[in-house]
Structures are given as structure tokens and as C-alpha cells.
Image 1 (cartoon, rainbow, N blue to C red):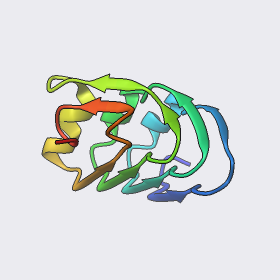
Image 2 (image 1 turned 180 degrees about the vertical axis):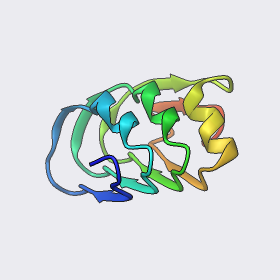
Image 3 (image 1 turned 90 degrees about the horizontal axis):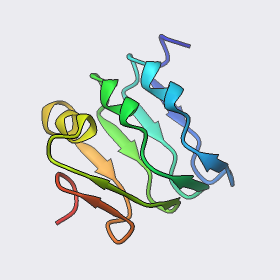
Length: 97
């Protein structure tokens, strides 16, 4: 799985936390997890996805605060063109305005 570049699991009624192991998929370019029933916080390990271009997490039950020095926020500024979250549930210094 380490060579996986795209994973779309949207609209699948997935429940629970986002697995921290997704952060090991270093060749991931697109990760779409929107419109499920995921909860908890955004794993900081996702900041390890140095090639990620789009990460979609909206439409879940994720509550989090992502600060400007957070590894995920650094990834957004350096390589990610889209981090899609519910801005009323995830306070993100780099993606919600």
C-alpha cells in the first residue's frame, strides 16, 4: 500500500476515527474521506503526506483545532492545494477564513 497514490472512500458511512496509519502512505496525492461518519480529530500524521494535493474531510463529525505551526498546516502551505474541512467544526488557521 505504500505506493498508493489515490484513495476515495467518500459516501461510505465509515465510522470511527481517521486511522493515523494513513500518514504512512507517503505517495498519496488524493485522499477523499468526505461525507462519512468519521469522528475525533484530524491525525497529525497526515502532515507526513508530502505529496498530497487534496485532502477532503468535510461532512463528518470531526472536531479539531489546527494551528499555523501544526504539521498538517505546514503541509497545506507547502504542497497541498486543497484541504476541505467543515470550518464550523474544524478551526484551521490555514484553510478556513
